[in-house]
Image 1 (spheres, rainbow, N blue to C red):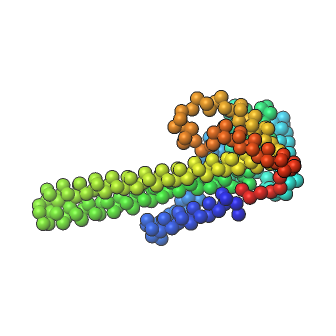
Image 2 (cartoon, rainbow, N blue to C red):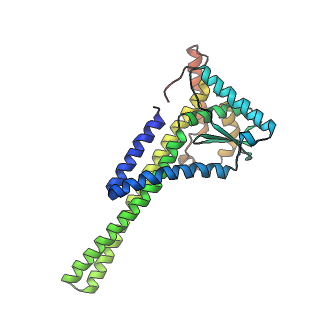
Image 3 (cartoon, one colour):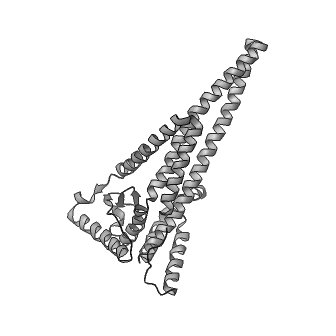
Length: 287
């Protein structure tokens, strides 16, 4: 098993455990059903939003160009000892220089077709596809949603019950007005605590997602570089730098991708290391 798969298994087990502590076996069943459904929907929505066309239904010229690019990358990987299932390949009419992996599908934007770095991006996305990085990323997203919904529902019930009980106790030993005021104040206080708990959960999950995504991006660059597409990837990053340099500091800090300069530097270090060792590329390595 590779890192993304290990994290997926561990996180899903933690989700089930959290579901149990939040709402017992009902929580476990809710998490076990809701998260896989959420991942499936998220993958399909990604393809829907891309408005992409499957390889088999493309015009002959586009179909041939994409097929040759992916076959070249897969054959090079197989010659080095990797094994692959064939991904479902799609072409989006988006002119942005980009591509992405959604489960068993890889989407390439129209802008990449004549960029000179199609194979490099394809190799990068094949790494994500092979090692199931997108499933783990989607699991984290759905963990945020599912556990937050479950915790919000259960905590809201607890807050309501505690506020009512305290209000009744105060009303019994004091008066109805005092009971109402006490119940309202306690309810507001516990509501604030509930909101803090949910916000902390959201922050932790989003931070984990960013860390994992940045790590897997660097590893996907390494995979493509070891297959011999380092120069294409550096060209791709230089071409897309202009579109990202105007981003605000907060956008860069919250980005799921490392900075272009860090990625280019990482690719260059890998190329230097391979040359020093006299390796043409590399044999399979743990990701």
